[in-house]
Length: 312
Image (cartoon, rainbow, N blue to C red; front, side, top):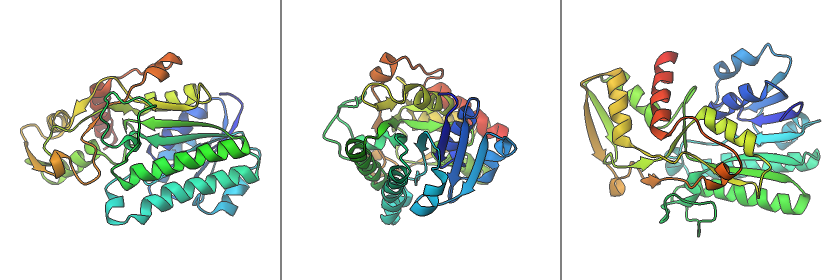
């Protein structure tokens, strides 16, 4: 991907800001973000670049978004509510920030005749899959969180717009993405807890929750390298998996050696309602199309813990 004008929604967020940095090497990037989750600090290093422009815009404001679509070749749509637990208390959040927002992006693209979309979806669309590693063709899809449901609904709108209006779309179902600029998830939560209490780390669930983790650089390279290939639907993860107990032990070892790990339990041993206890993705299709990750699941976790320490 070179010499393109690219619009990135959620540009000041975790994955979005890392993606902007990667794309700026060879393209002009228009970043938009309402800064409800993203922070300006994440994009401060790009502000002086003539190849980058930023607007504080809520993507649900379709008319404002249309102005940013002028001359755009490709949209990378990453803005979303990514906090799964937040949606449990307010079920409107995921519908508003994930479904309604995606529809607005699609309408703005249609209005300005932008024909290519790359979308960040999630492994949460699979719910408690009975097949692990889970392939893209697995079904029926039964999300157990509003977040997973909203991402699946957004995927459906993307497929329908692609069919009706000739969009070229690529959808990526991520495993748990970790690394530089991360703002939520187990690693972030554990570090925050240890900052308040260095003697005990309280952990949601029973510790046996085991999932695939992918480092953000591998994720970003995947969506750039794989967009537009095959049918446009790809899992992005690693072939290994890491347990919550491992993550807790690694975090304690780095931040507060000797701290006791206290498992609080949860529904069925998961962390909370909507938490998928076991997740692993079949990434055969991504490998078949030439993508490779550099860090396996546990290596990604270790580097993300180190990243968090370096940023403090």
